[in-house]
Image (cartoon, rainbow, N blue to C red):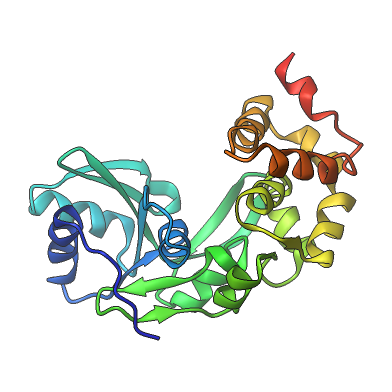
Length: 236
């Protein structure tokens, strides 16, 4: 599928630096989702086959400010005219420890997409305008279906904060939650107690800041089913 993603001058500068090395790079995640929904684009994340140290070296050699914000997990932040771009090396999460994991850097975009949370978060666009959708994210986006990629129980156990992200994505983008995904979230909700109060607070505030009060109320009613953790104790 061909699309016409808007390429700003800052993104042009970044792509010229990365692409002249001959590798394919893609815009991925939230920017793709918002573009398809015709929503404002804020953060633009990039996926690439370079090892993180290679990415850092390329940016520095092209006089682009580069910050090793999450180099252990493959993420370098490039800053161009004050605009940040997160560039993350393709990876497979080999072993997970709550919100931390052991990673293996790879060169397969589909394999990288498999580790992501929701189908609507795994789409990518290359700089020729080709859109890649490995898990029917376009259809789910159109239908308003919020669904974990692959086995929902596995996705949740990899990072229990995804339980709250499921509700937040439903509030912002959804009409319905995939029953298996909701079931996995409810089953493992007690593990939210292992997540820091700060991270839970951040997710809750994002939900509460949504523009439509009716959607917030609807979302909170569903969240009441997760009764093992009293969310708002996090604000005490």
